[in-house]
Structures are given as structure tokens and as C-alpha cells.
Amino acid sequence: MSVWVGIDLGTQSVRAMAVTGDGEVLGTAARPLTSRRDGDRHEQDPERWWSRLAAACAEALTGVEPAEVAGVAVDATSGTILLTTKDGEPVTPALMYDDRRAAAELDRVNDVGGQVWARLGYQRMQANWALPKLLWLLRSAGPGVRLAHQSDFVTRRLAGEPVATDLSNALKTGVDLIAEDWPAAVMDALGVPPDVLPPVVRPGARIGSVCARAAGETGLPEGTPILAGTTDGCAAQLGAGAIRVGSWNSVLGTTLVLKGVTRDLIHDPLGVVYSHRAPDGSWLPGGASSTGTGVLSTALPGRDLTTLSHKATTRDQGTRGIGDREGAGRSVPPVIYPLVSPGERFPFAAADARSFTLGDPAGDVDTYMAILRGAAYVERLCFDYLDLLGAPVDGEIILTGGATRSAYGNQLRADVLGRPVTLRENAEPALGMAALAASADLARTREIVEPRPRDAEPYLRFVEELRARGWLDERVARHATERTRA
Image 1 (tube, rainbow, N blue to C red):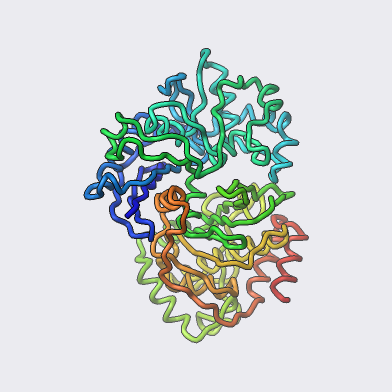
Image 2 (cartoon, rainbow, N blue to C red; image 1 turned 90 degrees about the horizontal axis):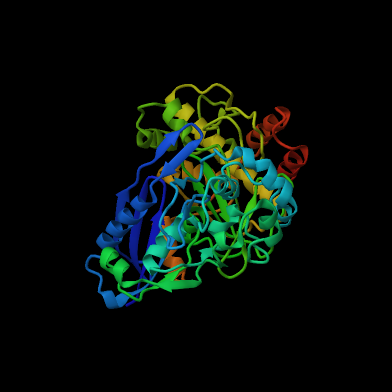
């Protein structure tokens, strides 16, 4: 029996998982991580990544025969970087994925590299991306430093020698995903010395073997193959099993994230969708919305969401789809546009977007349903926009994230999408890294939810409201309307 180890290096914890080739989880463990936040700054101590990773990995492998361990891969947060010595020792704190202290470097990055970014399917980098942060760090760095993404730092410790980075983590540092190398002219113009940058490989490529010292700390056998990992978002997609062209993983929790698979690179004139490179050379487009069920904690503080879900399901009995008519016989149900924070990122970009309510929710259950309805409408609009861009959206739709604990929400989303939706037993990023290491689909299906007949008009009313407020492009609104009524 072969056992594959996946490690998810996140913001609040590091999680390790030992998985067989047929998806059985033999062991799992986690250790907490802490951050330092101050305004636009968000830092972590990279040494803690290693110590916590080693402890979690050793516990997850308890009871696993060393001879059975066949490979290990690590994912990490996208855009998190630090500088190290040539021997891999940190010389700066880690600047986390949402650190925005390098905003002053952004215009120069986009002026110099804009043509490359456009060719890669997105228009501009953002202030929290890794390349602006790298320029900011290099301003005060001494000679001989090296760039390390979060995953690079720990995989180098695992290998005991320099390792390549993966194209997925390197995306926000400006790697050319088509050429699969750093854009030399851009980096030279920005003043980034070539020896600062690590070599790049596709996710899943072998980049080293576990060294004796790391074996003693992690429980991984010496000589275990180390496979290049991905970002945490791509790892979750792999864990969900959204790996075939046309399939999509929709992650609804605090916010909403969609990631799918296409043969060809998708170009988005609005810049809200960008693509990673898959291990087989295909593309993994996706986008992250600022909407989600995180609004529930502020709109319904202290409420039992499980009870609200049960009550919503009971009230929903006999109603149908997008225009489900729950609540005092209303023909148009209330909808809350559930923005977690000001500004929207996907399926449109609008810095001035704010949450709003259509209709008048009557009580906690109505409010709960209105929030989930708004999230489902945004999810539907995301798919309408992806279809407009030419992305294949006819494959399996896999729902993951905390919102899948709501049976009412799962049924509503199937109804709104007008498609069956798949729920997985487990879709953790650590499972995705085990799947990447094994070059296999390790996802197990829990349930398939079939859609019910639907009334499209309430969704279209929501789309029209977004358009009327000036947030949604006219062409996108028109395409959503035409696709819905087809």
C-alpha cells in the first residue's frame, strides 16, 4: 500500500494528512500559527512554519509504516514571500498574502510588466501580490539574498538543499505561465537580479527528496520524494476533484471562490478572473468574490445556524428554485446582497459596491434565507460571466466550504444554478496535496443534489439591480439575462 502525505500551510494553522491511493485518510493532524498585524502589514515568523509543520506531520504519520510513504507535497497561501540567505535561512519576516505595504511599487510593476500580465489573461497586479512586495523587500536587502515563497521555505527544509518553486505560487510574483519561466526583460527593468529568483517547475514535478535531518523532525522517511505543490486555493480544487475540463469547484464560506479547468487560457477584459497552470499544462481559471456567508455572523449574531437551516428547509417544502416563494405567500422573495466588506472583486470589480436588501425579510429565518439566496445569485452570476468569457461550464459542479453544512443552502444553490451539484466527503487542501503527490483523484462523493424547477425572474431582478447601481457591466447583465431565459 502506498501512502501519500499532503501538507496545507495556511494562515491560522498547518495541517498534515496521510492518505492511501484510494482516498482513505490514515492520519491527520494540525498545529496553530500566529500572525502580527498592524494596519496594512501582516507578518508571520517562517521558523514557526517549520516547527509546526514538523510536529503536525509526525503526528499524522503515527502508525504508518515508513516503507509505505511514497511522496509528499505542500501547499501554501498565495502571494506570501520572504527573503532568505543562499542557505535558506530567513533574513526578513514573511510578508503574508494580504500584506499591502508595497502599494507604492504597484504602478511601476504594472507599467513595466503590463503587456506580459495582459498576455497571461489578467490586466494588472494588485498591491498585495508578491512582486510589489519583493521590490519593497529588495530596497533594503543586502547582497546574496534569495526569494522564497511560503512553500519554498519549508520544502527547502524538507530537502536540505535549494529547490524549485512551482508555477502556481510564482504567479503573483510575475512568472510567465506560458513560457513557464521568469520574464527576464521585465525583471531586469524592475531591478530584480536573476540569482534572487528560484527556478520554476509545474506543480507535481519532483523537486527533491526528504533529507536525514528533516526525516528526524517530521517522521517522513529519508529519501521520500518531494513534489512541487500549489497555492492553497488550487490545492482545495484538487482535493475536491475538480480536475477535468469543464468542471468547477465552488467554495462558499466567509467568501465565495470559484476555480475550474479549461484547455485554453481565458482572457478577462475586466481582470477579475486569472488562471493558474495545471500539472498537465491545462489551465485553472478562477475568481474570488467578496460576498459570502460571513455576513451571517453580523446579521444574525449568536443565532444557531443549524436550527435556522432546518427551519428554512421546512418552510421551503413545496417551493421551487430561484423564485422559491417562502414567507407569507410573497411572489418575490427578499434578497440580501451579502458583501462581507465594501467593494466587490468577482464576478465584477466595483470598489464602491455595498451590501443591499431587496424586499423586507420578516424575522431571522427570512434573513437567513435572504442571505443564502443572495450568495446563490452571485454564484450563478459568476457562472454566467465565465460562460461569456468562453470558459466551459458544462462539467461537474462541486460545492465545498462551510456553507455546505446547510441542506437548505445546498438545495437552493442547485435550484439557482439549474444543475446537479456534488458534495464531497472531504475537500481539504491537504487532501489535494496528497492527490497531487499521488497524481490521482482521491475525492470521495458524499451526495449529489438534483435541481428543482425554477422561476428565473427574482434572479434577473437581482442582476438588474446590480446593473442599475452601476456596478455590473451592461454586456454582462445582458448575457446573464439571455442565458437564463434561453
